[in-house]
Image 1 (cartoon, rainbow, N blue to C red):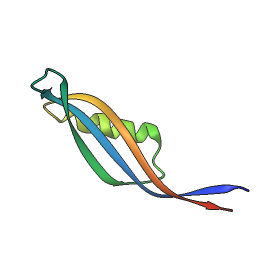
Image 2: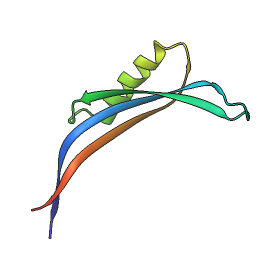
Image 3: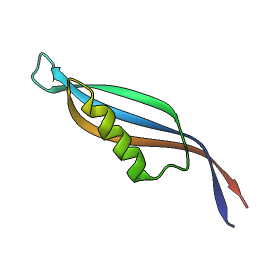
Image 4: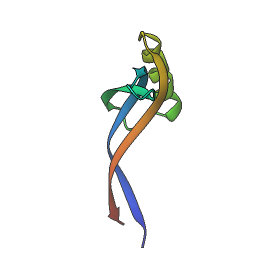
Length: 74
């Protein structure tokens, strides 16, 4: 039985280094940008994330793409 994925939403998450905790481990802040076009390529999402991270005062830790969708049998 074939299963299809119907994309519902995509979000861009940018994690920035925000300092350290009292125990010395790194602390991060995540910025979330919702309503990203579900058809956007991974390269486009990365490029936008890198450009937005460049506008921040903090150091970039990682860029994530979060996709949500519905699975249904075809």
